[in-house]
Every structure is written in C-alpha cells, then in structure tokens.
Amino acid sequence: MESQNKSVIASWVVPGVILIIAVAIMVINFTTKSSSDATEAVSRNLIKSTQVYGENFIHELELLNKVAGPVRAIAEREGKWDDKFEKDMAEILASCTDAYKVVFCDGSGQGVDGQREEIDIGGEEYFQKVKQSDSTSYIYADVNDPDESEVKKSIVVVERVAGEGNKGYLLLYYPMDKFKSLMSKSDFDSNSFLTVVDSEGNILGSAGAVNSKLLRDGNILDAVRPDNAEAARTIKNRLDNGSRGTTPVTVQGESVMLSYVPLGENRWEMILGVSQTYVDKQVSLQWENTKDMLSYLVIAVVVFICLVVVINIVSKIRNNEKKKELEDKADTDLLTGLTNKLATERKIKEYMTKHPESQSMLFVLDVDNFKKINDTMGHAFGDEVLRSLGQQIGAIFRASDIIGRIGGDEFMIFLKGVSDKEAVRKEAKKVEHFFKNFQAGEYVKYAATASIGVAIFPQEGNDFETLYKAADQGLYKAKKRGKNQLAFYRDEWGLAEGETAEPEEDETTEQS
Image (cartoon, rainbow, N blue to C red; front, top):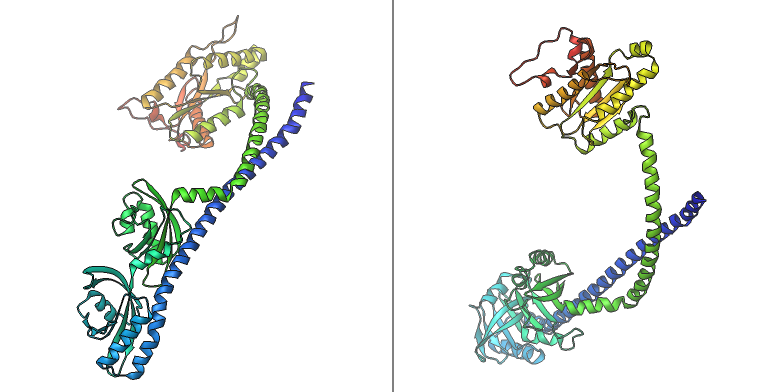
C-alpha cells in the first residue's frame, strides 16, 4: 500500500513540479522582459525627444543659412564690393533674420555690421577659426558686445563669399540665450534640462533646470566623472563616436538619466537630462497592468510550489534514508564488514579528484599463505581469519580513512592527509606492527602474517590505476624479500634522515 501511495504521489508531483518550474521560468522571463521592454521604451522616448530638440536647434541655425544664401549669391555675382554695397547687404540680413548681430567683412575681418557701422573683428579668436576652415558652417564663440558691455555665448553662422580676387564672410550671430526657448513647452518635470556640448563635454548652452549640479562646472563630463567614472567613460566614448544612447548618473545625490543625440555638426551633441524619479515613474506606468497580473500569478505559484516542496521534501527524506541503507549494504563486504572492492576504489578516486595535492598513502596487503590456512585449518577458519582481520585493522585507523577488502585475501588501506615523510614512516610502522601481533580464532589462536606494499599519492601516481600499480610493486617486493613485511614502492620513504637505500639485486623491482 505504501508503495502504491508513493507511486501515486510521484505520478502527480513530478509533472506538477515540472509545470511549476516552467511557469516560474515563464513568469520570471516575462517579468524581466516586460521590465526591460518598459525601460527600453522610456529610453527610446527620451532619445526621440532629444533628437527632436536637436533638430529644432539645428533648424534655427539652418534658417539663418537659408536667409544668408541669397545675399551671398548676390555678392558673388557682384564680384567686387564697395562700402555702400557691404552696408546694404548687412542691413538686409539684419532686418530679415533673428540674429542679434550681422557682419559682412573681408578676409582680414574689416567690414560693416547690420547697423551700417564699420567693424573690425580680425583680432577675435572666433574669426581665426572662421578663416582656418573652409567647410565649418557653425562656430561656437564668446562674442564681445560693446553696446551691452558683456560677453555673449553665441553660435556664429558662416557664409563664405568668393569675390573677384577677394574673399569675404557673412557672419550671423545666434544667441545661446535663445536656446532656452527650446524647453518652453517641455513634456518633462521641472528638474529636467537640455544642453549642447562639444566632444570634450564643454557646455555651449543650457535650458530648463540650468542650476543642475551637472551643469555648474561648465563641463558635463567633469561633473559626472568624480561619482560616476564608468558612466563618464561611456558618455565620452559616445561623444567621440557620435552615437546616441542613455546613461544613468548620480552627482552629489542628484540622480539623472542622460539622453544624448549627435547634432551632425562640429561633433556637437544634444543632451537631455531627466530626473531618475521621472524615468522610474514612466517605466512603472509602461507596465502597471502587467505588474498587477504578475503579482497575483506569482502569489498563486508560490503557494502551490510551497505545497509541492513540503510533500516532496518529506518523500525525499524517506527515500534518501532507504537509499542510504541500500547503498551501505551494496558497498559493504558481508564477511569482514569493510567496504567491498568497487566501493573502495570509488571512494579513493573521489578523494583523489577533490584533493589532488593532499599527500596520502595506499597500502595493498595479502595474507601470507592463505591457501595453506584453508587447506590445513578449513575454509570456515579461513573466513574467521579474514573476519578478524577486517574487524581489528578497522579499529586502528581514523573513521575518515578508507579500508576495504578487494579480493579473497587481499585488502586495501588508503590513509588521507599524511603530511610529511616522518608521518609516512610512522603509519607504515603502525601497519607493520599490527601484523606482528595479529591473531585470529576464538578458541585456537592463529598468528596470521601479511605482505604489504605501499605507494604515496600523488608522487607515485596521481590517479588510482597508477597508484595501485605502484603499491602492487611494493607488495611484490615484500613477497620477494620473504613475506611478513612491508615494502615501499620507493624504498627511500621508509628510511630515516641520512640513510640511503640498498641497491636492488633484481632489476624487475626497479619499475617506475
């Protein structure tokens, strides 16, 4: 009946456990994927918003280019420009664009502005950058404004004019203060900011929460690096590569998700900073319903798993007890009570695998003249000799050592963790001394002797087969030398300090 009950339980527990595991894996995967998808969706939205801001910013600069284009064409068709022509062109540009300043100058920087006033910008640093490049359309500059006695952060829009033997420039100045208008209708919270940076992280202009700790030092990488060195490296790599992405950072307690998109000009990058609280809220909203459903499902699965686990544990404990009992019987030599050959070899191999560097000793011993004992004293007495040997030799070693009967009158002893040569000699003497005093028989005492071979692990064999052959060679030596003694595979193990081994007469004993 008990067997039937176990069979019934197993018939539904095993499939049930498999089903639960499958459901659990699906739930975990679905939860992870849903959370990951929600995070990626928010990240994509941030990148998309950043791209829109970047496109709007570049669009404003391109409008200045488009207005300046026809004026450049007129100037190039004219070929030569007198003072009046330059003033007229500059005035036209000033009236048709939102640029706060317009300059029409020659290659030396001499020219006029939109108010028809003569101007010389030849000594300005940004004008040197204009002259050095034949392709750059936009140059960031700190522009001195004499009328307002201040320096304006500006983007200088450059149109190069080719005349007859002359080269000129139409320069339109876009104020970075106007950049702030990009976030006038922001979809993000009040802690969000927008900034344009160059490839070194220098901030060219900012909008939104301009008091953010990430913007205070004028370089966003310098602000990020002390608390987020790895994030700073990631951002720098993407600035260098002109790639887009998102990176979470925390600067002095301010947690922000940075989203960056290249502007396609001068390796500038548009960066949108949104508070991590806002990002987390958006992620949560992305999968709120999914999360509730998963919560109920997980609770149901957990309860069911607990029930199955309890039943399974109880059943497993009982099975393990029975299995251990059967394994012990299967591993035991019925005559001596020691482990049998298969179990002995298995346990020694397991120890070697787990402790490949732990010096140990393997004894292989044969009862001397055992056939004569059987022939003269009877097989029953021979069994008594083996039984007594198993009982008595098992008592002189540690419980952790491995002792087994591996043949009719052949035994194996594996001593674990024998630290040094002195300990090796001591253990060998112990075994040898045991057989000097061993007696078997309850009424008739019989002094049985044994020949013993010894090999050392791992020096004389780092696997069972090699070590056993070495110990067997030691056994061969012991028998050849007259039996009733112990012999090492290498004789030097049995020598005290300063002693040397006698040379062998027969080369067959010098096998390695």
